[in-house]
Length: 430
Ligand SMILES: Cc1cc2nc3c(=O)[nH]c(=O)nc-3n(C[C@H](O)[C@H](O)[C@H](O)COP(=O)(O)OP(=O)(O)OC[C@H]3O[C@@H](n4cnc5c(N)ncnc54)[C@H](O)[C@@H]3O)c2cc1C
Image (spheres, rainbow, N blue to C red):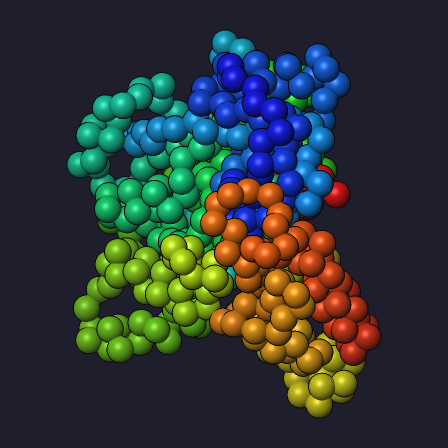
């Protein structure tokens, strides 16, 4: 496989910021994933697994190692059956967690876990599935079946492309996640979520290459350890796996999820007509809402040169909530933090609200870095990078400028509310 040298990374990121990768490879098959990672391991070269680059800030110096872009493609629809074959050894594949006996359904537990971990809503299904090894023609075979359907999606597929495919097939479960950039392989990493759904509710299993054991493994959804913007892949096992495939369980003919307040408001007039809304309509309205907030990638729109939300919404206890309300002389908006035991007495508050109350308005600028003109939570690169790669002061913001702005915001929120905002994008090469 081709290993390139000094490859500019900026064009591979939605921020369009960052220096070069010392080495760069694109894998279009699992064999190439194994090959490229072996190349890095043999040379003791650090490895970074790249998807669509939509949740990254790459340093101006770039990455002094091998950047492996996951570019495996393919979507196969499988008929969902009643029984789950346990995750078990198959060829070089080995189960990632405890393998239970036949008849055991980790998804009964997963449904519970998913409901518990999805405070913004999202449907979850408790029945089980027998994975099929069929490829290619599966979509046609499954297309007439009512009920559930498993989509086996290669990690390099564009997420939006998969959402559109699901909506076109009248399969519910990811329609509210329309318009999110990035690859399918990136979705389990931070448990992507928006507008009342998160992938934890739809993921059946994740296949990945274990970089330590040098073997392919499969995780049930329960084994992925999903919670708000979190999974084992970005916490305990950060940097340990290259995801090669994700299986999603969707509901054919299912109703769209309309639980998120903004979405309910946007759909209220249509709902008042008393007719059932289609998945396509809901996905389209979600895209419209995203665009109004600069959260949809649109060619030529400067608000798109971002990594989406730059800060996570903080989860706070009663005492902190009272302090914030006292300081701002107004109770902050709040949402359930999730029913995990540690969150029972806590609420999630919008980081955007805190940032605004700390004195930053939409469009606030620091050099070529700015707060988005449409959403306080997104930091944007104001320059026109023209896809040329690398930082050029006349053209765009540097990673250092973005971090300087982020640091200013974090310090201001901390000074005013005594609360430390956490950054959401992954930092590469710092
Ligand atoms: C305009 C905009 C809007 C956004 N809106 C949302 C939103 O509403 N909700 C939300 O949750 N996120 C949102 N995001 C963030 C981002 O789109 C998601 O996190 C996305 O899933 C990242 O996928 P990616 O393929 O681009 O990953 P990358 O940015 O390439 O990588 C992100 C992390 O995932 C890892 N990774 C990626 N692919 C793999 C793989 N195959 N195997 C192992 N690790 C991998 C990387 O190593 C890195 O740690 C938004 C971003 C933008 C720019």
